[in-house]
Every structure is written in structure tokens, then in C-alpha cells.
Image (cartoon, rainbow, N blue to C red; front, side, top):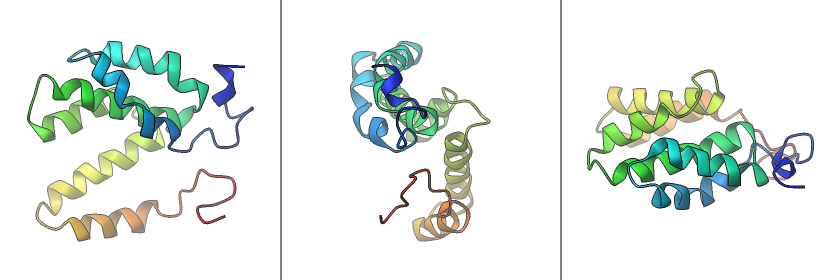
Length: 131
């Protein structure tokens, strides 16, 4: 039963990107209020995900929320990351992406290559990416 339906004990896909795809509404409902957006995510997101699957949604919602008060994309992307625990894989991955963007600001392909080198083997889906 919700909200435990998204927990890894009940859902082998708890770390998939479902909530990341759906979470924009939480940021739209809480313009400039990242903590409120996170609270909405806590109530809704665990229906489908936990762990990194849920953190992705919180991050997306935080970016939407911040976009109401800033048009500085770098600020939005880095500030929203503060809503995610630093020890999570999601945080580490996004932090790497931001770091590579800073290192290769005019070369998205190099950034993508760095992502592939480090993160392409991190597959949370129990059946794999192409199953």
C-alpha cells in the first residue's frame, strides 16, 4: 500500500527514474519554496520510488521551484543539488556532471563521454537497461 509501494522491499524498480519524470509538478506547486517542494515529493514520490529514484524527483522539483526566483541556470542546478544527500549516488552523479561541465564548458560530448566512463555500469534496474 502507498507510500510503501515504492519501497525497495516491495518494488524491484524503486531506484528507476519514474518519479524523476513526474516530479515537475511539485516544484510548480511550490514556486521559490524548495523545502515545500521536497515535502510534496515526500508525500507523493514514495508511492513509486525510494533511494536514488526518489532523489531524482526531488532534484527536478527543486530545480522547477528555483526557476521561479532565478534565471541563472548554474545557480538553479547547483542550488537544487543541496536538496539531495551528498552520500547518495544521485548526488555524486549530478555533482560529477556539473564538474565536467565546468571542466569542458563548450564540449557537451566530452561531458557525456566522462559520464559514460564513470556511470554507465551503475544500473539500478534489476533486469538491466535493455531487458
